[in-house]
Length: 331
Image 1 (spheres, rainbow, N blue to C red):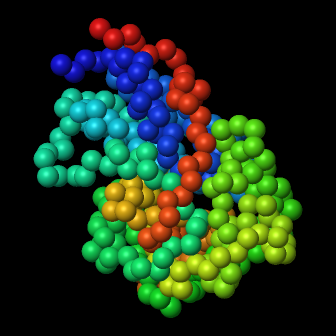
Image 2 (image 1 turned 90 degrees about the vertical axis):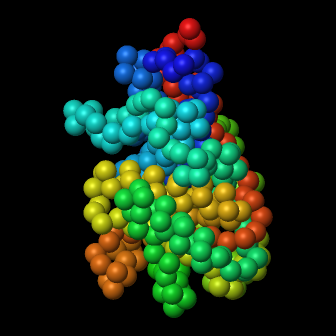
C-alpha cells in the first residue's frame, strides 16, 4: 500500500538517482529536501557551487538541475509512484527550481514508456574516440521524439552543418583556453576532483583529436596543447543540437530534462555520448549555432553520439550530503 511517507533508504535511493545526472564541470549545484506533509521532493540550486565566470547567467545550473529532475522522475516511476513536477513553484524562492510530488500509482502502462532506471547508473560521458559506425536513423528519430516530449527540439544536422557547428565549437574552445578567468575556472575543476567529489578527474578525460576535426575540451586550458595525448577520432562524428523555443529559466529546466531523457535513452540503446558545450558559454557563439532555416530556436546543448568505449564515471556526493532534513521512519 502506498503511504505518504518514505523510509530513509528509499529517499536516499531517489536522491542518488538524481545526483547521477550530468552537471557542468561536475559542479553538482543542487540540494534536496523531502516534505512529508505533501509527499514532495524539492530541488534547490546551490549558487556558490556554480561556475561564476563560465555560467554567470545560471543557465548551466538550471540545465543541470533539470537533468537531475528527470532522473528523479524515472526513479519515482520505478518505485511505482507517479511524479508530478512543478518548475519554479514559488517566485519568492528563486533557488527552489523544482518540486516533485509523489502521487498515486504510476500511469505508465505495460508497453508504454521505457523504464530508463537502469540506464541512470550506466550513463557516463565518453570523451574517447568512437568507432565511426553510423548511428541508426531510427534511434535518432526516437531520441528526437524524447526531446519533444520534454518541450525541446533535437535537430539532426546535415554533414555540412555538422562541420559548421564543430567550427564554432573550436572557436569557443580557443577562447576558453586563452581567457584567463575561464581558464582558471576550468583548471579548478581538475584540482577539485583531486581532493573531493566534485570536478573532472583525469581518468574521465580523453585525448585530443589528432586530426583536429573534433574540438575536445582541454580542461587544463593551456595553449598550445601539445602536452596532451592525441588519438584518431571518428571521421564523421554524429552531432545533434538540442534547442528550445524560448530562453527563460523554465526553458533551461526543460532543456535539462530533455537532455537527460536523450542521454538515458541513448544509453539504453547502447550508444555513448559526450557534450560539446563550449560554444554555449559565449552568447555570440551560442546564437550562431542556430540554423535560421529551422526557426528562431535557442541552442542549449550540442551532443556527440556514437558507438565506442564506455566513459569513466565522475565522482558524486552521497545522497546524505545533499539531502536536507530528516526522512520519515518506515511505518
